Image (cartoon, rainbow, N blue to C red; front, side, top):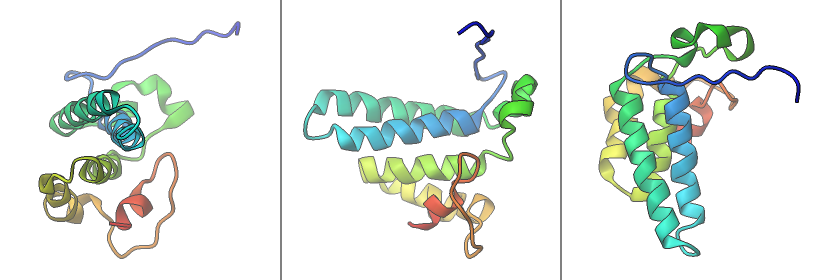
Length: 132
């Protein structure tokens, strides 16, 4: 590839809850895949997913605000649905009721879009969280 591909990061000063929560959801779901065939790797995935989710929730913000040059490619419309998406997968991976509470009680009314029809896309995870 000859085109320039700059790297960027999200952190406490430049949050990206949407990106961090999306990765946490992917890790939590992958931990379920590896649970029986590689328990150690599954544990690592789940533990890292929990840490990344905590980071995404603590340092809230959209990555396209923190890294404005990405707006013309992948402009995020929000991060709440990704936080709920990650909490959903973490609940399935851990069965920790605090994730279900986060999803349905603490943040569900704010971010859930409950009762409204939705679709599932890279930028909208409402349909996935509504399955709960």
